[in-house]
Image (cartoon, rainbow, N blue to C red; front, side, top):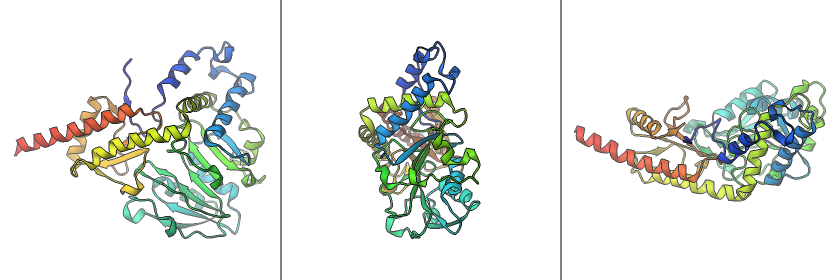
Length: 367
């Protein structure tokens, strides 16, 4: 069976082993005689799958006991509203570091709920870098500090996280969760849409410190962390198929050697493609400054729009999928999430070198 070399930004590549296991279990999950899509979410069979997914995430990320793992719906975008509704109290303000479009959208939604402030930003420099920690002007009385740990559109990623003392650090980790080792205890809330590193679209993971879960009866039930916590994320019918696939991806991650091993491979994958950029004598130009480069999304441009169109056309013909840059900025982007094999990254780097040589040869002939 021919498989695409998938560099889509999300929904993104899933491990082949996960897809094959799901295929094998498709008609008969847990010896139930049913597909997972047919199981009652209140059944013992699904409860086992559900709890296994939560425990696996706790194991892989070494989540402390004073944190709750919630499996919610609405994507990471719904968390832009849920977070301020649950933890931004009257008289407080929420602080934001702007590093791209998604942090801008999180700020926009928080403004609808309460007071906000931008305490650092790289917007004036077209989001080419992550602000230095010492440049973050954090309000010590802030309800929380919000960051986006990896920026899919611009290809930047936080290498070190701010020390916020008593201010809860809130991180959108949709595009790099499980890609490297983190100290969960440094965060008040970590949230992530699953469709990049955790599974298919339709499920959102929220890791929240228990003291931030308050029973505010004025919040609509479906937007209330307390309601979801009391019901083990089963207040209403969950996306059962997505949770099942999440559990399989987490099993796969353990089989790879856990987060540390995955991070090691991710570093190798990123290096292969960045080397192709850096050794191209300017033919390929990375968007992100070197010390802010993402290991998940490699963004770059070619000398002209014509060259980019030709590159993308030939890449598609060669079996590469999803290399178009985001519609808002153009260019090219290779999303190399956990499930993208190292061999695919090497294939892409080889293609980039070959394309550069052939394009320059064609140009020379035209002169």
